[in-house]
Image 1 (tube, rainbow, N blue to C red):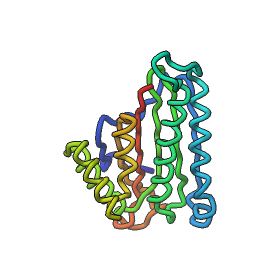
Image 2: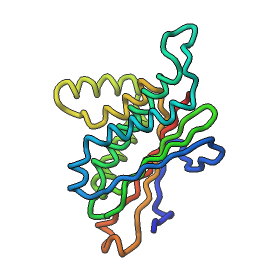
Image 3: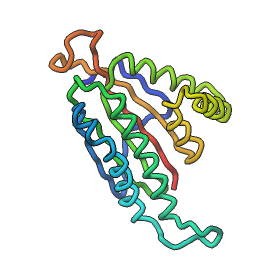
Image 4: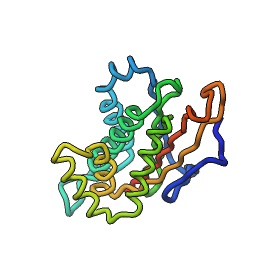
Length: 203
């Protein structure tokens, strides 16, 4: 159960995906042992999503480029899906015993990604701080700063989001909704928050 009164959204958030032509959802166990054993499989899952959705696009090469739309979509979907899955799994609160999921929705001119996980308050605070910095910064300057920090061994955890925005023109929005079901959490300090990330990729 979630508490809508405490919900926070960032960006142009909407989880109304009606009108799509096709959709697919994958769910992953939050169990620590399973997470360690299957870490390498998340890339395979992302590649599967890339192959699945690329099949809906033309395979012929554009006259101005040797790369066809199908290959372009496959690469973009695989990269974005892999980043979203790994981040969702990595920052999930395992004590919640709630699954991580990623859904993709195919629309006429865009593919919509939705990643859902459940995070502890410290993780939520860190993520929201980054989002606020992202929304209030010059993206080009922030990307370069992050590249420099990564080169020095610092700050690499946010490069995936910045790369999706910079290289794929991905549009992000977020919703944070605290869980108030006391069968899941016992005290307000231990609340688990549902983190809902929506990414729109124009194709």
